[in-house]
Image 1 (spheres, rainbow, N blue to C red):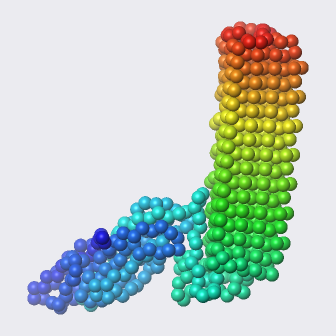
Image 2: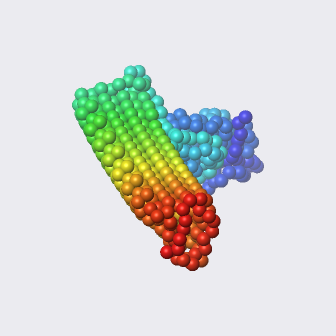
Image 3: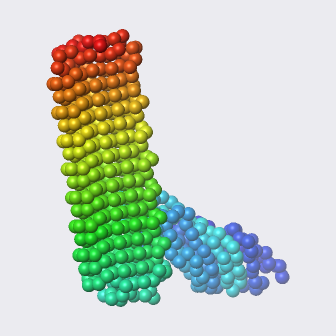
Length: 567
């Protein structure tokens, strides 16, 4: 059922030479001629009506008629209008137009999804009528509105860039004048041989190859206002460089393969989905002012650095691999690496952003790994961070590494600058390096923290929670410090060297095993009013007596093995 939501109407009363015009829409001026044969057809109040078609907008590049302008005069009408929508998830096709509408006819108003923005709901389409003129009446500066239902994908996690329409015949590229991701009659076909040297900074270039491979034995240097690639394979033995000046580059279900040349993509915004970008040399993707989104994309260099940068960066489900350095940086907003694989055989990995979400990510190399959330959270829930021979440094505001696996042969340093450092049920393992874990408070219940060197856990202002955790060093000191409570019930704390536990509140070691084969174990409670609880604990050091201080603290419970003594 179609609905007329708003109309611009007039009522004509002809009494001799007198003419009265009563408009029912918003307007600044309206005029009518004097002949008595002026009549209004259809809706007796409607001069220009806007009709809702009830069509929902769901896809980029697929314009949908969401409304129609209806001419209800008994003559043709020329209407000049400007149309807009109140959401950036939609765009009006041909928003500024002058059309002639036959008597009783309708002019369609088309809207499409507008990447990179997405969303769903009800928007308002507004049509500002500059002038609508028939034989008998003219109206100026009128305003019409109609609701538009939409459900549009964006270019963020889980969504894809637009799928461009193919040009006619065997053509594979065209200049998309109206930037609607569809070929329209009259738009220029770009010959295949021109594609690798296309240079037009004001053109929207679309390459839609229908699965074809475009193989060029030369450098590919493309410059346009925007570049959209769909279902195409671009190959060369040389360098490939694509630059969009002030707009976007997008690849959907495509492959870029240069055997021996660098790959460089640069634009205000870059979006790839279902795409493979591969070479033996450097890969550099730079979104200069908006998002870099490489969703479900493989970026692979056999022997070159990989550098990704955007505002922000979303690499959800991406695979990023090389033998050299990998550097991914979000200049603003979140760096998202959820479910991603980042693997460098022989190079450093540096991942940085205001916040970093690497949930379920796998990050591996033989060298240093450095993850930095500069002002907000670093999330590593269920992630694997592994270096065979390099340091691992993790920092955030706060850090959540619940169920994470963090392993190397070198030093591991995890620091929460604000909020809680969470390592619940995590594995933190260094074969030959120190482990330093620090935050305002530390929650490592059920964690496994092991190395051959020193282990140092510090809760700077809150509690240190190690219930059910394992903290074990074969040949290094263990230092556990809390400026509040230290809770380590059922924990295993074991080394061949000194064990030092410090709290500024209660210390709970019920059912814990504290064992030092060749060193002393000491318990320091910095408040005489604090309570030391050791019920069922196994306390073993070289003399089977664990010393606590100060002597005035309250001791509760009976150890299962060993004893405690004030020192």
